[in-house]
Every structure is written in C-alpha cells, then in structure tokens.
Length: 153
Image (tube, rainbow, N blue to C red; front, top):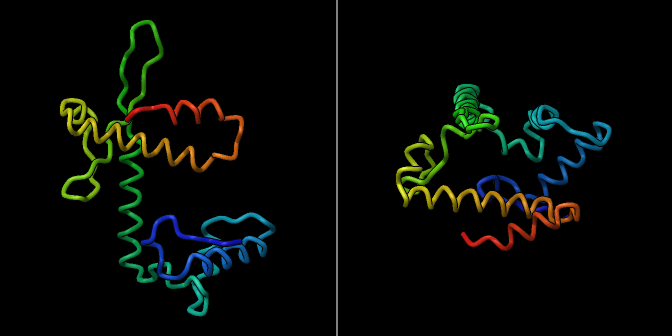
C-alpha cells in the first residue's frame, strides 16, 4: 500500500510510516482497529507514530475538551416546524472562516448575510465533493454522483 496524508498538518511522520504501523496494529487486532488500540500501541517512545500524539496530559486534556466542544457545536440542531410535515432539524451552528480561521456561528446569522451564506453553501458543496471522493467506487451512488457533478456552486 502507498499512503499519503490528506491533511498535511498530521505530517509529524510520513504517511507511509503511519499507514504501515496502523496496518500492523490492525493485523495484530484481528483485522479491525479502534482508536484506543492505536493510542495504546503508540505510547512507547519507540513506536514509529509516537510523535503523532500529544503526551503532555494537561495539553491533551484541553485539546480533548476542545474536540468535545466542536462535537457539541456540530450536534446541536434547531427544530423548524413545517406545515403538514415532520419537523425539520437544521444544524444550529455552522462553521465559517473569519480572518482565515474556522469559527462557528448561528445558522440564522448566516441566513441573513448573503456573503456568508455563499460561504456556507460553498463549504457544504466541498463536503459533498469530499463525500463523493470517499465513496467514488460505490456504483450504487452513481445517480447521486451525477447530481453532485452537475451542481453549479
């Protein structure tokens, strides 16, 4: 297998080294892996992917809470009543860029600002393209892929 990082910020070791090590751990665990298996195997300073993790507990604990906050922001929805239909659940907060930094903002604020709404649409379209790329080998979604490809955003 040839491995490459999708996001270069993870590049504390080469993607090839990380991929090979994760495959080794997967094989060692019967062909399936959970994130905690990777962390457990990476604790040793001699692990090829040890440097990919933050081992200072104070820093790591804060990072984990930040990830929990992001998860919370992605999980909160607004219930919109639709006449004669099931309530519509819409994400309450969306991620936008402000000063080249990702921030979350209430969806109603973005709906009111055409420039920001364009950014939200473009961001959603990028997520669709990423989903399409991830599942491009699944022919069962060919019609969905065609729709994504035909979109003009």
